[in-house]
Length: 240
Image (cartoon, rainbow, N blue to C red):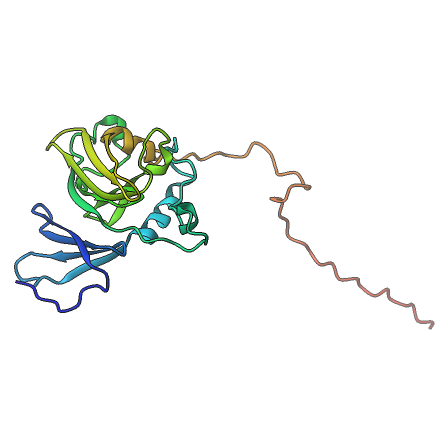
């Protein structure tokens, strides 16, 4: 159905087909995500290409001052220095696993400002640094969970990741294996709580206020039209 001699320089690690949006998603070891349309007549065209690191940095920038309670300590993706590589270069976020994320039950009144009802087709993206909830409607992150922000979690950098959740359930289970040791950890995630922690404040009603007095002249908001008064020359009386 689709053939490509070269899709990415890095090996492909994961593949997922979403029947609801009719999209094929594949991720590689370099943290790149490709989404193809499998709708009849679209000829499997590439809908979008996503870089996990750039998308994550954009997500943190947008939500840094807008969400009410920040679950992440530093709200930034790890660099190579965090892995004791001795430099400050950025590390790749390999796409270790893809799984469906059902947000239909997460959209209760408390989460009404998280997502619009028509944008509930989402995807779990498991990487070495954390979990990402990816919206297949607008191709943006809805929530991010970094492993290093949980000190009780024994694995900070994952070598493999698998996420599973029941259809219509509000919890997801994530199985991690360590990249640097023989260790396995299971992480239980409450999807509504994760969305609430990153939700935007609900838009309020516009407020219009009428001034009760004029702005004082020392205020930077004070504005007046400067009238230029031209000095009229004094007439000289001429002697008769």
